[in-house]
Length: 427
Ligand code: ACO
Image (cartoon, rainbow, N blue to C red; front, side, top):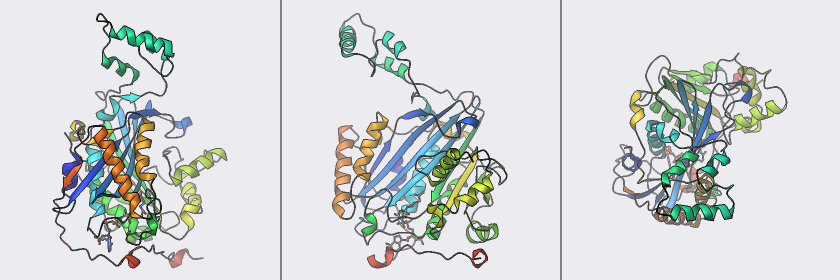
């Protein structure tokens, strides 16, 4: 059994009380992950995780991660797309190391067994005629038939079992899976806020500049990639950084030199002369927006990866002078991962995608110009967790920092700095 709370208390400040709200969506089969024309998988299953942490009755941090499983005949790959991580500054001057929280959460997710996602998957489409015959009530059942089915179920002779509704889900078996690849993918770009609207106005919020954010993520992802519990440390392990518009020597000297040997400039989607087929279509990702434009403009088949990165540089998200990077890791998964199930006591698994979005909206739908937003978000999450009988969300931190962080004054910390382009690029 994997316990997130036990892991997180080891990276939260010693003696302080925190609340951990971990929400998971149901797994569902999706259509588009790579361009349909070139897909090589039998099914793609998506699941989302949302983690929010509160201190002193206020949510102060949240992260959004989507996982995509590509299931093939005897191989499987899963891609962790870190969509957004954000803070809001309502931490009452408590010194919390956000990088440790992020790394720990990703470690926890990568260690979870894929089976826990693939045993009960909402299928792409359902055969409702089949369910009618099984006396299952679905959205296609008329009210009259629904009542009839319910009254049948009440009869003593009826053999209906609650578990029969599992027929409405697909199950993917991993027994024949010989190769098992894990990928991490993320796009780094600093913004005043991502998940906490208006929090950029809080002068106590610590904002990392584009360059520092990129280095921050590289440190986290490098640490995960060299953990042999998560990735086999063999020749298949690859860490990549693409910085559209920067030359390779500069990228290596400035960002990759300090990392492990398996890092190189480029992407996990192929070499510069390769076509674009390996670039995944993630939800809410600038690369995806560009990819979709290329499909509409009928340029998708004509472009190579090098054209893609070159053209991406002039897209709005990339050209504002802020350092923006695309980080990727790909490697084989060790067998040990296959046994780790999440603890049901601490994870709230939303019964549907709509419910997941609704619960998440109690955090992302608030305004964080003032601390009321952070208080309301925490109070709402607490109520929801209790209504689902999830009472296991309080932890006491155990982490003692080696170095004492000197908190800057509020007006000094909320400044995103811009880096000038290196001289060689200024033509
Ligand atoms: N005063 C001085 N230094 C501080 C302060 C402060 N108030 N807070 C943090 N620091 C220092 C830390 O000591 C640490 O320094 P070190 O690396 O030398 O040890 C460094 O800043 C990073 O601190 P963390 O606690 O790890 O992270 P931080 O609090 O800066 O949070 C985050 C990082 C979430 C990215 C934050 O900057 C933020 O909310 N940014 C806005 C949203 C954003 O841009 N998100 C990233 C999007 S990209 C993506 O999510 C894939």
